[in-house]
Length: 112
Image (cartoon, rainbow, N blue to C red; front, side):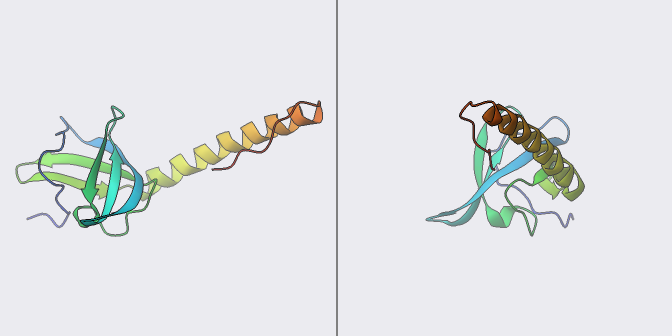
Protein backbone atom coordinates (compact mmCIF):
# COMPACT_ATOMS: atom_id res chain seq x y z
CA UNK A 1 0.00 0.00 0.00
CA UNK A 2 1.36 3.45 -0.95
CA UNK A 3 1.73 6.24 1.59
CA UNK A 4 1.08 8.82 -1.15
CA UNK A 5 -2.36 10.40 -1.22
CA UNK A 6 -4.72 9.28 -3.96
CA UNK A 7 -6.16 11.82 -6.36
CA UNK A 8 -9.91 11.65 -6.99
CA UNK A 9 -11.26 9.42 -9.76
CA UNK A 10 -12.26 10.97 -13.07
CA UNK A 11 -9.05 12.95 -13.63
CA UNK A 12 -7.03 12.47 -16.82
CA UNK A 13 -4.74 9.49 -16.40
CA UNK A 14 -1.16 10.12 -17.54
CA UNK A 15 0.56 7.54 -19.74
CA UNK A 16 3.67 7.93 -17.57
CA UNK A 17 4.60 10.37 -14.82
CA UNK A 18 3.34 13.87 -15.66
CA UNK A 19 4.27 17.19 -14.10
CA UNK A 20 1.22 19.05 -12.81
CA UNK A 21 1.40 22.54 -11.29
CA UNK A 22 -0.53 23.69 -8.25
CA UNK A 23 -2.00 26.83 -9.81
CA UNK A 24 -3.65 28.00 -6.61
CA UNK A 25 -5.36 27.09 -3.36
CA UNK A 26 -8.90 28.23 -2.64
CA UNK A 27 -11.81 27.93 -0.26
CA UNK A 28 -14.85 26.17 -1.71
CA UNK A 29 -18.21 25.22 -0.18
CA UNK A 30 -16.77 21.68 0.12
CA UNK A 31 -13.62 22.88 1.95
CA UNK A 32 -10.06 23.77 0.92
CA UNK A 33 -9.20 22.85 -2.63
CA UNK A 34 -6.31 23.09 -5.08
CA UNK A 35 -6.54 24.16 -8.69
CA UNK A 36 -4.10 22.03 -10.72
CA UNK A 37 -2.79 22.86 -14.17
CA UNK A 38 -2.13 19.81 -16.32
CA UNK A 39 0.58 19.69 -19.03
CA UNK A 40 -1.99 20.43 -21.77
CA UNK A 41 -3.11 23.63 -19.99
CA UNK A 42 -6.36 22.13 -18.71
CA UNK A 43 -7.15 22.89 -15.06
CA UNK A 44 -8.89 20.68 -12.54
CA UNK A 45 -9.91 21.31 -8.93
CA UNK A 46 -9.30 18.67 -6.26
CA UNK A 47 -9.70 18.63 -2.50
CA UNK A 48 -6.56 19.69 -0.69
CA UNK A 49 -6.69 16.46 1.34
CA UNK A 50 -6.10 14.40 -1.82
CA UNK A 51 -2.67 16.01 -2.28
CA UNK A 52 0.56 15.53 -0.35
CA UNK A 53 0.85 17.43 2.91
CA UNK A 54 2.37 20.90 2.68
CA UNK A 55 1.36 21.60 -0.93
CA UNK A 56 1.57 25.31 -1.84
CA UNK A 57 0.62 27.37 -4.87
CA UNK A 58 3.31 27.04 -7.52
CA UNK A 59 4.43 23.56 -6.45
CA UNK A 60 5.23 20.99 -9.11
CA UNK A 61 3.74 17.54 -8.61
CA UNK A 62 4.78 14.27 -10.21
CA UNK A 63 1.50 12.53 -11.01
CA UNK A 64 1.47 8.89 -11.98
CA UNK A 65 -1.14 6.19 -12.30
CA UNK A 66 -1.03 2.84 -10.61
CA UNK A 67 -3.41 -0.05 -10.17
CA UNK A 68 -4.89 1.69 -7.14
CA UNK A 69 -5.38 5.09 -8.83
CA UNK A 70 -3.47 8.32 -9.35
CA UNK A 71 -0.73 9.43 -6.98
CA UNK A 72 0.85 12.86 -6.61
CA UNK A 73 4.29 13.51 -5.17
CA UNK A 74 5.71 16.96 -4.40
CA UNK A 75 8.89 17.92 -6.24
CA UNK A 76 10.45 20.60 -4.01
CA UNK A 77 13.78 20.78 -5.89
CA UNK A 78 12.11 21.13 -9.30
CA UNK A 79 9.70 23.71 -7.85
CA UNK A 80 12.60 25.76 -6.46
CA UNK A 81 14.45 25.59 -9.78
CA UNK A 82 11.33 26.78 -11.63
CA UNK A 83 10.81 29.64 -9.14
CA UNK A 84 14.44 30.76 -9.48
CA UNK A 85 14.23 30.71 -13.28
CA UNK A 86 10.99 32.72 -13.20
CA UNK A 87 12.65 35.26 -10.89
CA UNK A 88 15.64 35.55 -13.26
CA UNK A 89 13.29 36.22 -16.19
CA UNK A 90 11.36 38.77 -14.14
CA UNK A 91 14.58 40.53 -13.07
CA UNK A 92 15.69 40.70 -16.72
CA UNK A 93 12.34 42.21 -17.76
CA UNK A 94 12.51 44.76 -14.96
CA UNK A 95 16.06 45.71 -15.97
CA UNK A 96 14.90 46.15 -19.55
CA UNK A 97 11.90 48.23 -18.41
CA UNK A 98 14.13 50.42 -16.21
CA UNK A 99 16.38 51.14 -19.19
CA UNK A 100 13.36 51.92 -21.34
CA UNK A 101 12.03 54.31 -18.66
CA UNK A 102 15.39 56.12 -18.56
CA UNK A 103 14.92 56.83 -22.27
CA UNK A 104 11.63 58.60 -21.56
CA UNK A 105 9.25 55.76 -22.28
CA UNK A 106 6.56 54.99 -19.69
CA UNK A 107 7.44 51.55 -18.33
CA UNK A 108 7.12 50.42 -14.76
CA UNK A 109 8.47 47.56 -12.71
CA UNK A 110 6.78 44.21 -13.06
CA UNK A 111 6.05 42.16 -9.93
CA UNK A 112 4.67 38.70 -9.41
